Length: 119
Image (tube, rainbow, N blue to C red; front, side):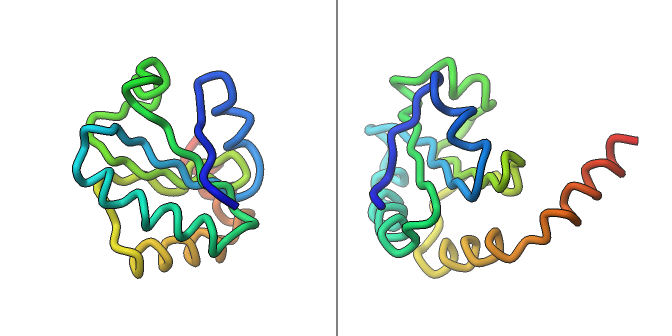
């Protein structure tokens, strides 16, 4: 599966189910351009995962709502829960390790931790 361009109108529904990685980027950003092939290659290697890209120039309101202050920023969602957020480009090996970490999360444990923090 290739990457998907995300917009404010479809962001919430896209990240609400399954595993979703989102790359916040801009065309003028050198590190963003360097990370793009890594992100694209991962999308080809993992067709069961959604890989979305948000152009922060075109989607300024979405970038603001997500509190993006540095790009690239990578987010990972699983079952609608933000499980990873970090600014900066990752090398391919590190990104693959992150993908495997998100895959192996015990989501019942994650939900229990969120519930405990809310108390």
